[in-house]
Image 1 (cartoon, rainbow, N blue to C red):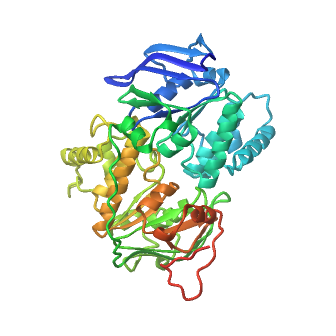
Image 2 (cartoon, one colour; image 1 turned 90 degrees about the vertical axis):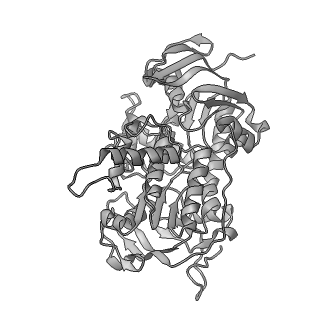
Image 3 (tube, helix red, strand yellow; image 1 turned 135 degrees about the horizontal axis):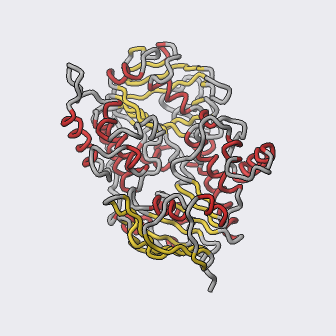
Length: 512
């Protein structure tokens, strides 16, 4: 028998009264693709940070190639050959892609060589990446690509991937899987965290399931079904979505021939973008991150006030020049893709983060009714099953998935007339994702107009009534979700669509 590449014995980590990891055992063999599965708050991210040296365990042993070692820092982990792609990125906003990656390498390597290596590795994985771009101009998806390429440039012996496919087209996911299997064939071990159970069943050789910080089971995912993996993870199968007949009402949100020049040389120019969302329907926008979705969301939400008033209309009224606050008063709410910094203030409590978009607890005198604010936060925590100590917990103390549930819950709880969401279930476990999708369908059934931007094709096919695809700043014709295929949408993500025939209504769509 081979010596395990990595072995953890009785690892325990506490944060105050919270036990994040409780007597955890984990064994990863050379060349093995090993999944770590668990719902949000189960302790997966903490365990990965322990392995990477970013968090020090309170108890337990760490064996590397059969020898006990102590990993006190990421630098020591990288020296052993451990690389990690975090769910929350660790990039310097004002530096370029190449400079960010260069920081973790020897100063003896010229920056120009690093840039060339980035281009080579990115092409090898099918991940488009410009080493000269400044990080602050990148979308969330593009930043994840930086992290993946940075990890792979170190030729790791153990690669930890946290939700690596959330920004890829189906075709690119298949190519990444081919590469990961090739890496594993050379002896590189891979720890793979994903909430996509079909990915785990397709890719991974073994799976360790965490529940409430403890190992709940170890299994061969290829011998499991999606339902059985879900039961191992959350103790039950996720609730099935109940879809009622699609009955769209009046036109709620309209974008007409919107063209906007990019704000900087790294941005995306919007080219004659038009879309419609009616009351009582969910409209989806698919596409690889960085193709203009962020620019379009800024124009719709009010973050970008440049559009002509008539270019964006809400219930027939021009709102292109209105700010985000004015649009919220008219019933348009928005969930941005970036959780910390835009969706929530990291240092503020969950209760005080409500004040970003909600004003019910603010009295006419300007004083904040703290009790009412805490009560609202407590209701959202309970309704959306957010794992948090309470309303006073600061936003940055929550796991990524739990913070996402809270932010989405905050906007849904406001009972919007139009709700625009970007990547609402990114990094959220299967049970929570099913709940959020169910809430969106419930909103639709009450007459709310929902616009959903997502890179999760399964999600779009599950909850939307009509689909658009965005590529290079252009928006495809709409297509009814019921008649669309994954292959078609994947092709359209590359801009390969045809215009609808003359006289075709805008809502009927077109097929390639």
